[in-house]
Image (cartoon, rainbow, N blue to C red; front, top):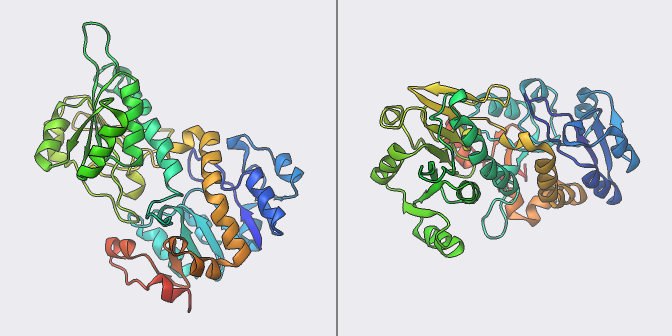
Length: 372
């Protein structure tokens, strides 16, 4: 198989879909690899590093899309990239289709086979290709939230860990999954007073057992959430429903009950955001204010630490990429139901039920679609 990796063009996206190590593995398996010139520079990988392991370096993204059997990326294809996709071509990347009807329609119209990192599952139902970026985003969330809280940025002017005689910032993390756990660990490590909210009592027990009081936990009832949010200096939204649009957990009306200058960090913005007032921002212009509350809603948070993120993502995606290339995508999916769960679009049909519900588009079962 010819595997192609274009340079990411989403604003301030410095990650790359294929590291030189991953490219070397693919070549060792008998496949050919082409990479767009400069694709790895943002993550610290030179064109010569790709050439040294036998990959071809081409001048333009047009050549990558025109030649590759499988295109490997990081972020969802932008409109100009979607126009380059063709029938029968495999796209392997993050998609986050539920809040993005334009991308969904373009992928359906392209006839390509689009496999989304964020909906691939393992044998235990976990999301192995989303997890590394969730870990990065979770660890970044308190860091960027602390920056947002600084008075010069419009925040309350509260220090996360406080000082003797002055209490720490109060941080509420909504969601006790991978993002929420990492966010709570870092925020508590910064000295903040942290509470994690979740609707799963077994998960709350697990967090208590694992972290032994490092942070507090609470059941995420509507009333309890509203109470804690009103007291918070920072709220981190870390709720995920695989493939689906994120639920709106804080309404605009509830902002008036919050402390002026409090910070909302929406890690679920890729899936539409979990605050009613969330809208996607970039690293170049990351925060905005609504009713006195500061919002940080960067849609590619891990791109800020591109080298760490690229290496972590590459470690996770490599086995799946090799399986798709070695067996062919159909045979790979027939052998692995978790990989089949990653199929979102194939041959002009939507194949993910959560996306179909969110966008009100008819869906074909992925198991039927791959036989078409």
